Length: 605
Image (spheres, rainbow, N blue to C red):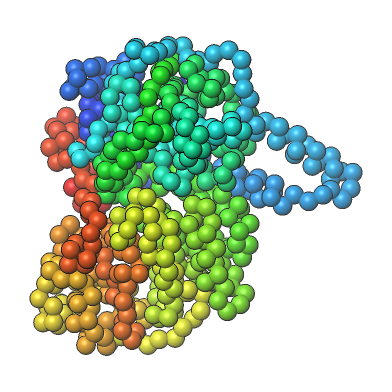
């Protein structure tokens, strides 16, 4: 990490914090606040790191928010993100050369590709300068953070998880949260759709232990590569070689057969017994909710190695915006050419960070025939990690830029009717909490490629409409109308919920001349005027099959927390919130500098 720290400092993208801070809540709370600032704030280097509970002062600093801005992403990539995407596009469209000069040009391009393949070295790497084996292994000697008060313990949040198939023919690099159970056991939160989980199934069927090595730090691109959505069986470190034009140099782990980059700061090695599972979690995740306790595989740590001079890399997740906003931006741009091979008429796509990425995608396409957008919906919901997207809105080539949310929403709402909606069922991310059952739930597609004509409603002012609504639904607390100048204004209504929201909707149908799209949220914890956090709340909380209803031109959406009155039997998780006493303590130390307006907008407490 040393070179990256120097690079960030040189470009005024690093803030060094020398104040003594605890790995329990204090450090992650400060990083969480930093990334909420305009343009993502700075990367933070904490140089005085302690574990007060166990009376430990750590030798190494902790680095956070390293990818937390567009500028830092490109600095760490060493080139523009667009140039990487252009290179992938060129490779995908490479044609046989027509003449001698074209052959020379192609030979040069192909020769440069020799550097993308990872290179296995003999001997040891700098990551193995210090070694702890067997009884000397102690995970508590690493500054692993506990991010949130309800977390099940400390979690490694930027671990590069290296695995291989049973026959050793395929290798994988992924990123999964890793819970520290004790000094030599980690929880492996690889979900069923991840490559490592597929490998795990092979070892489980064979009744053999599975080797796992976890890298932390080194070139930050290793960490980004761990998140790359490459096809099954493709080594993610190929992306490192493609981006840097130098091969990742690997050395063998000292206690298992896996290879890891020689210059990572730490390596945690071990074995997973497929016959053993343990409850993992809870954990305040990037959905902004706690993911609940569930059984996951356990890794028994056999060795920990590290550099002499090292830095512990970590991230913090919770409510948006987060560091993954910027990592996801880079990923989306770079892998757009690969997505186009599945849907060639796709012109652009965008995943708003306040919908947690998998909860909403906006896509621009070239519609060529009737039903083309619905065909796209099926293609998206069957394409790799896109299959976990819950809600998708498709527009034609005449639509505004997808990142221009005001103009985009106006375009969609002016051509929306209930028949624009396509509701189906499909696979969901394991982190989703809203569906009636785990891993499967409703999906919503909206076809806005067609210019449906509909007359706008007869608008009332918020105060007048609120009085009319309260006459019909006594549980209503407040409301606010968004996008009033469109043909389909959105009315957000907060309620002290005592019944299923469908009953509220049915009661309001008589006001349909004044209403079009009605969204219900709980009065507690929601501001009906905060559109950013309402998108986060509603896309998280709704299941399209259960929570969308219509009557004529009026559409209802239930964005409330689900309870027994909804027939919901799963446990509903809590919001991820900062601990107020920790925030107050950081203010007293003079190092909490997030302004109150931003604090309230992003609902940190």
